[in-house]
Image 1 (tube, one colour):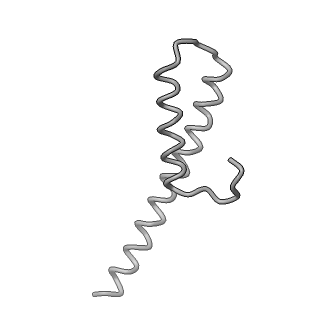
Image 2: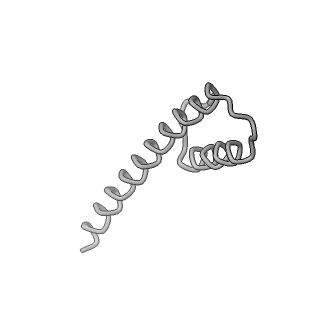
Length: 66
């Protein structure tokens, strides 16, 4: 990815693209699969962190409303 900052939406889109590519590909190239799985793991961790950070931010906002 050439962008310096990855967004949640970009990560989800990339994950969906990887999944579609793996599902539609009849060839089994272990090197390609390995790289796709590594990238997918990175993207999933990124998304989990983004969701966790958003949850914390929303909790703080809600606390200030009470």
